[in-house]
Image (cartoon, rainbow over all chains, first blue to last red; front, side):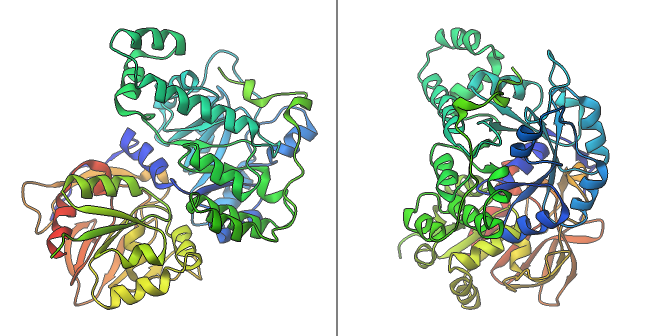
Length: 296
Length: 192
């Protein structure tokens, strides 16, 4: 019995971790105690950050990568993968996160962008990246830069699922429409999407993104999570929705069960019964700042 | 006799890759989320994913007891990565309350290679698999620390078993379903 040389950081290894998270819930946590609650509730990964998006919105100011001590404390508490956010284009924050042993980097519009023209060159890293997208062109541009997972952006910190639904429908709807394009039309699609032709052709042929598509930004209830899944997301990120609810442990668990059983309304009803108040949430029309508009 | 139906435990993880692998080999594959689904299958694949989350979902879905009973009664099963952890007798570096199905006499260590940066691909010789080494994708993978006498070790990394078999239970620490190499699935289907 023998083994050949090991190769790390390949596409297959990066996208493979994203595949393993499918059907699961990734929960935002701001300290080790919350990380434990998330793991106990059945999270497949935690996103370590200093403030959940709802608080980032409330507090204002520049929002940056979390303190390494916080990330290390969370890594030391849970056995599931730990993700952390860097600012759009801030490749040094990403280098620091990789050196800390983070499993996945989220190059996130929830933080204040560091570069107005360039996203991080994600091919340069051994660990995988997830990026947000509001439409198919944006998703393919991020994949062309090396993203191993796409999440629809939604509008983080609102507890309002309307933007997540808009972005998911846009991405999934365009994938469907692209599938019926002929050999000549595909070039016009690439132009319209402002995306590399080879990726556009790959999506047309396979009927899906080359990497897993998850949903983020506004999921606050078990039914919201199941809605995202039925619309074509393969897993969900829940940010403020769990720890801004009345009973985070129960909410987390209920969202996990609803994500797995997203096509079974009886189970969604069962886990939603007597759950207490969801996060209060915000009407998107009243927001001063749309985080989804960050990135391009 | 009608052809066998192979279930894929579909609570969380890379379910569709296993369903595709089984169908490519001509098997009748069914996603299993409920006790009623489990009753319809003759064998079960436990896919990759997060073993802690799947373990909780086994309980909340009412699947744990019927699954234990089926395994006890000799149902063939194939576990990859998290699936291997779930089938093992003992789990190290897991959660204190993590319950395994104890269908194969192994002590496994979760996430034995370190964080995602250490996840890797390699070619691996596996006993009983002909036609050259298997291409193996290890993602935050477990290894076997201790194997009971009844366990047959089929492949190793760093002296730790990563492919093993006991009766009709087959496990591996990596993801054959991601590499497009279906020979371990074939080996499993021979047992069904």
